[in-house]
Amino acid sequence: MRAFFFLSADFLRANLRQVPAILLWILSVGLVLSSATALWALPLYPTVKETQPHRLFFLALSPLLSEAEITKLGWTIWAWPEIANVSFRFPGEDNSESFQERTLVVELAPTANREEVAQKLGKLPGVTKVTAYERVLTPPPVPSIARISAIAAFVLSLGFCLFWGVRTAAKSQKLWREESALLRDSGLPPLYWRSPVFFFAGWVGLLGAGAHLCALWLGMRFIPPDSIWTQIYTLAPWATGLGIPAGVMLGVLAAFLSPHS
Amino acid sequence: MLAIQVAELRFATEEGVWVLENLSFSVHRDGFVWVVGPPGSGKTLLLRILLREVRPHGGQILLLGRNILRLSPKKFYELRKKVGYVSEEVHVLSGRTVLGNLQFKMRALGIGGEAATEAIERALDLAELHGYENAYAKNLEPLELRRLGLALALCPDASVLLLDDPLRGLGKPEQDAFFSTLERINQAGVTLLATSREAQPLLARGFSPDSTGHRGIVYLREGAR
Image (cartoon, helix red, strand yellow):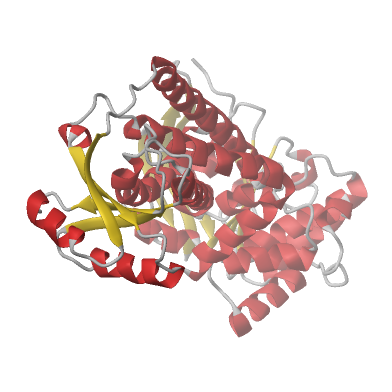
C-alpha cells in the first residue's frame, strides 16, 4: 500500500507540468454534473402541489403602532400553529399586491380554518382591517429553449469532458512513461504501473464533483421563488449524493478509455 | 546447481513461423551464457518467455528451480524479484540522478530504510557506479547508462540477470569496460544470460559453444517457415 501511494504521488508530481489541462478537465467534469442536474431539475409539466392556492390575510395596521410593536405582533401571529408565514409590507411597496397602509401578510397553514383565524386576527390590538386573499401561483411554462439548452449543454459537456479527459490522461501517462517502463522492466505487475492514472483520474473526478456541488449550493441562494428551477431544492441532496460517485466514475472512465503508453 | 533450464522450447508466430524450435540449454548458478543469433532469431523473444511476458507453444522452463509456466501469478511475482532484466533500450528516469533512479525503484517495491540503502550500495558497487551517484541519467555516457541499467536490474537482490543485446551501440573500449563490469557481477554470484548478434567478441573472451552452462554460447538460427 505504501508503494501504491508513493507511485500515485510520483504520478501527480509528474503531472504538475500540465496543471492548466487538469484544471480544465476538473471543470469539464463539474460542467457535466451541473448540466445533468439542470436537465433533471427542469419540470416536465406543472405539478398539482404547485397549483394549490396560497391562503392569505392582509392585516392593515394602525398608524399608531411603533416599529417594535409591529415586530412583536408579527412574532405573536407567527407562533400560532395555524400560521405558515408572516411578512411585512410598507405602503406603496412594489409587489404583486399594492397596499395603502402598513400591512402584515399572513399565510395560513394548509389545514387551518380560515374563519377561526380571521376572527382571532381581527381581535388583535393595532389591526384595523383583515382582508382575506387567495393567491394561485401558476408555475411559468418551461420554455422549450431552456430544455433544448439544457440537453445541448449536457451532451456537449459530456463529449468535451470525455475527449479532454482521455487526452489529458494519455498525456499524463506519457509524462510518466519512463517510470512505467522502469516498473515494467522490474517485473512489477501492470496493476502497479497502470493504477496511478486511475487514482489520479478518480481525484480529478472528485474535484470536478466538488466544483459542481459548490456551483449547485451557491446557485440555490440566488434562485427566485417563482423560477422554473425551484425543483432544484428537492433534488439538491440527490444531486450531491449521486454527483460525487458520478464525478469519480467520469474521471476513471476517461482514464480507462485513454491509450496507455 | 542450475539457475536456468530450458528444455525443448518451441514458439511459432501467428503466421506459422517457428522462431524457436526445440531449444534446450541450461545455465549454472555461477554461469555466464550468451544467446547468439541474427535479428529475428528469437533472442528477445526467449528473454520475454523467461520473464513470462510471452507464453511458449511447448517445452519446459525452470528458473531458479521453479517451473515458471506452472506458477501462480503471485508466486511468479515473488520469483521475478530475483530476476533482473535490462532491455535493449535501457529504461531509466532521465530527469533523476543515478541515486534517484535506484531510490525510485526501491520505493516502488515498498523497500525502505536500511534494506534499501544496503541494496543500493551493493548495486552501485557491482555496477561500478560509485562516483556517479549524483549524476543525472540524461547526462550519462552510453557506458554509464548501461551500468545504471545493470544497477537497477540488480536491485534489490537479483540473483539472475537477463540482458538484451547489452553490447549493441558500444565502441570497443566501452565494450571491454562493460564486459569487465559483467564479469565482476558474475563473480559476485549472479547468473548472467545475455543476447548478442555477434559471436566473435564473445569467442575472443573465452566463451565457447562447447561449454554451455558456465561460460557458454547458445546459437539460435533464423526463424524458418
